[in-house]
Length: 128
Image (tube, rainbow, N blue to C red; front, side):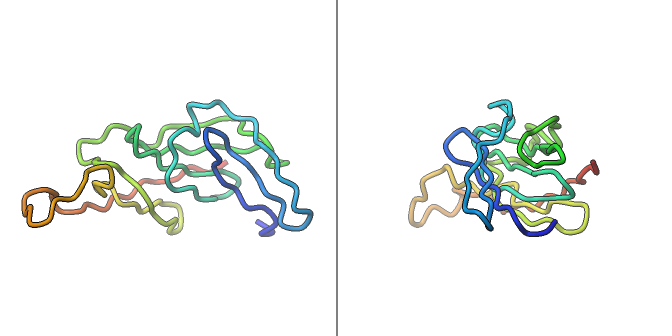
């Protein structure tokens, strides 16, 4: 809330960079809550993670010190529209994201039927 921290995923961990001191902290979190993230967003004391390889969007709830994940929820998982869901943006209390990026499929020049239309999804975010 004070724009003091930058949260990021590094390999299979979640980290917090203190923008004032430069200190990097690895947050305590279950690996399955973080692994495979491609899109990380802050929302009211929580982090929202798009996980394309697992086909879902999760919300990780932080403790008050913002140095540990105390709970997490799958907001949407294995939706039939998903084809490598990826990047998005928080708008109010929703995450709007690309549900069908096909980023994991090599592109073949001239292949008209290769990728269906890109679909955008919204998912409601939960408060603390």
